[in-house]
Length: 123
Image (cartoon, rainbow, N blue to C red; front, top):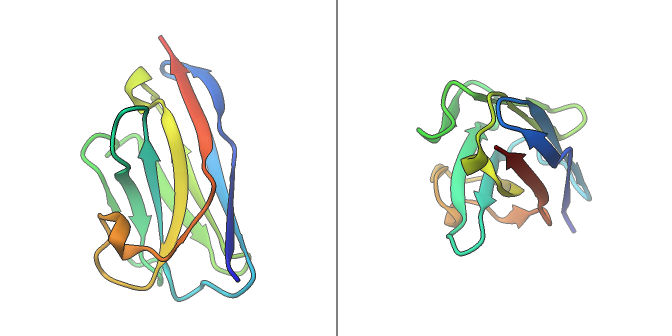
């Protein structure tokens, strides 16, 4: 069994910062791509960021590029999402995901999901 647990969400003012963490347990995921998705009420789950299994490449959605940064600690099987210059439009439940495939940008590319952590950005 694999379990991913997100933490670090909360309520912040626009322009503020948060750092999300995702801790994995059950088995090693060091060879998996680790991504972040988010889902707002009434909207589909959307891609936010991914870091490739070897850490060589990172990719971001256009809406967060330049503001968010993803990183990973393979020794602890933990992935982080540093979120700066937050906007009200960033309000969503943020999900950590892990998967071995190269289709980074869709939910089909990931096999394991966390339960999500709420991020709310006030204006």
